[in-house]
Amino acid sequence: MDYIDACRIAYEYYQAAWHVRGLCEAKDLGEKWIFYPASDEVFFGNSHITVSKRDGRIEPFVLPDVENFRLMKNGVVTEIPEEFRS
Image (cartoon, rainbow, N blue to C red; front, side, top):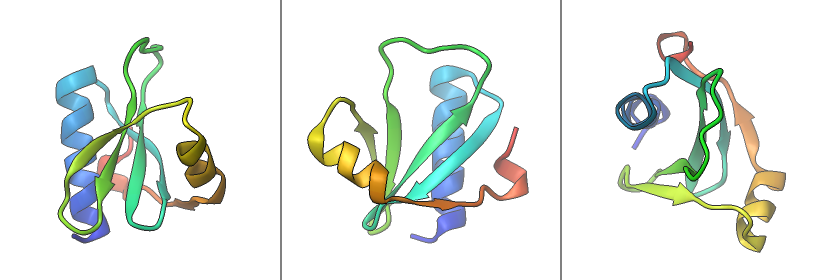
């Protein structure tokens, strides 16, 4: 799975599930990327998603969680390609 395909997966997911206009941030967490949607609205009860580098599988990124806090702290911010930005 390359990063562009992962961005597309996250973009399409957030548009369908949350009706957002694009992605605003992503972090490389090692075995997966976490993506944040661009939106002016607060979404209660929803979690952000990760996309697996191995197979493109989407998983919720739930907080609070000790391991997920560690992943966020050590994650490397990656640039969102223009076509997926808001």
